[in-house]
View 1 (cartoon, helix red, strand yellow):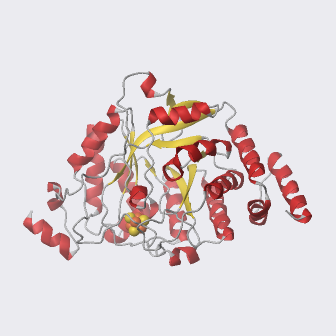
View 2 (cartoon, rainbow, N blue to C red):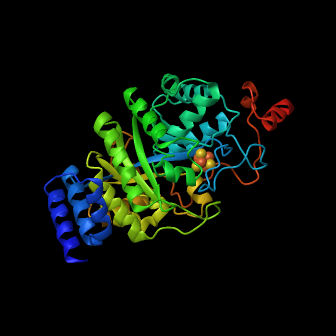
View 3 (spheres, rainbow, N blue to C red):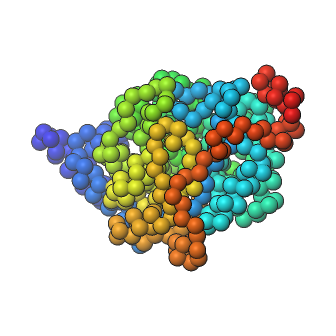
Length: 407
Ligand code: SF4
């Protein structure tokens, strides 16, 4: 590091340690020139300031993708199938109830429910599903539908996004996941073919509307595709601005792009880049309380190291995962392994809910819970069944109309 850079890094680092805020140019200076151990030290200092009790949390929930049929066709996505595809699916309500039963059996309290932009699911389908879940499982939480899905439902049903949020909240929506953010810079979104599913402003506006409606949400960043370092930092700055206004984000989660089986292709960012990006986000996002480790994309060992680079949360004992697995990553950790990783790093592990309220100690220490050695999938291979209740909803695509006629 040249001495001018090193002096500047030292000056910025001192301000961060004193509790000061960095601007975009300073964040870039740190990202480019601060040694990795210094970035980790700064991030860990902020983590310790916000969480002095050395508790690392995690949630037991299930990552359910209700449909893989999607008209958005983001070029970094290996999960979606086109309308009419033979391996496209929509889960039935009964299948989703079974998944909730299995989640409750291992101590879970929430579904993270996201899916493709399916043109054949009107808003009533979501409302009926949410109401049915809440009437069977009144205490169970629905962390569901990222901003691009809210926008898709709004366009499909010709109703404003705020009305979509209000109607879904009335049906049982508890919080909104921060998916679909990728990089909140429109140049990048156009290159990734995700600009039309939601522009940067649309994504941020929907989150602000959700916060106004009283919901808490998370925020994410998928890096390592075509963005520049400046754009990675611009993404963080835009989130920080919304958080200054609304205070509605509970947590930030970043992960590297997973290239396998995608149209975009390319390579995955390295582990050091992940740790530097995570640490930088902890420094820049000084108004976010919680940073999750993305062990599902980085593996358990880097996930554990994240706890020294600003993370205070291990995310989810997720039981099921389909999206990241479709792009080649297949890490799986059950509660026992997550807790071992947390404790071995010198922290106390606690279960939490989506609001980051501590629920208690590891459930497997309270009662017998089956070990989970592989993540479940949305459906068994070859299961092409069509849920019965779909015939209650009007289809828009020719393929779905034909299918529902035969039901
Ligand atoms: S990332 Fe989401 S919106 Fe984009 S193609 Fe995949 S399923 Fe569709």
